[in-house]
Image (cartoon, rainbow, N blue to C red):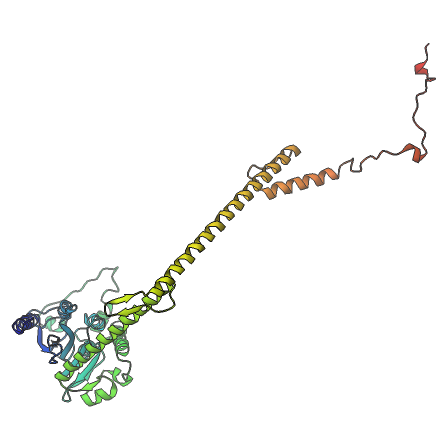
Length: 400
């Protein structure tokens, strides 16, 4: 790219970012990479969730700006230039979470106020820089105020009537109690939960912060550094330089992670290929030498033999299973025949065990009936009993 085209590209970027509410683009002055920029996003008004008519832009709008540059390789980081006393709760935690997950380094800077909701946003940065003359930092807490004009209007002859459904007795309850001077419900149900989340988010984002700051007080830059509210005292340029520094650190970390992941993938490839030595590598990639090719050939042959052995074992197992199934079928048929011959009545869905049990019980019952002891033929000669004979002198053989 020529110098003229570089300048034209930079000019276009500067114009585009300025038109979207970003105050400035700062060029990395290192000659090795002259086209890298850090965006400085100005937050110097009360915090609102949405853009205000004829007023400051909201956190939603700022998120949209950052979203548009998130994947731009020219932009290596963001500096939040904050001078705000805070603002709305609504939208602030969401913006805080968005910044925590932002893929580029974020550095926070203040030379004035960074309090309440503004600190909530600023604490999401990877590094916080404060000018030594910064006015107030902290104010971690929440409060609410409203103006009760009912008495004023009544003096003017107006009467305000507020009517709630009989099924809506919980609606605006804490607010209605506050109008009566009872603030306890509003504090407990509305303010305290907000502050609990605020404190927990700050502790999570800044692990070294002192618990002393969670009472809502504000501090100057020096004390803020001691209490862990900020990381460094410096200028806007200090913050910009830090963003460039963090971007290079992120690049190195990502490169190391990529190399480590590649090495792990290669280890898995080596294991699959059956290699004991790592793959040889050059600038053009990895390759296999003759010894590794022979190792792969041997490994593949071993795998083929293992598959053949497994297939043979499977065939034998299937044959044994078929024989066993045939034996079981024959036994089942014989058992059914025995049941039928015995005259027993057995349920059609009876199991083989139930059929065997029925036959056993039948045999036991037969054994208890007369004829249990078998008749034995005796040898008459041994027993001294005369042989049987026919007496023809008997009257039945005589003629009358």
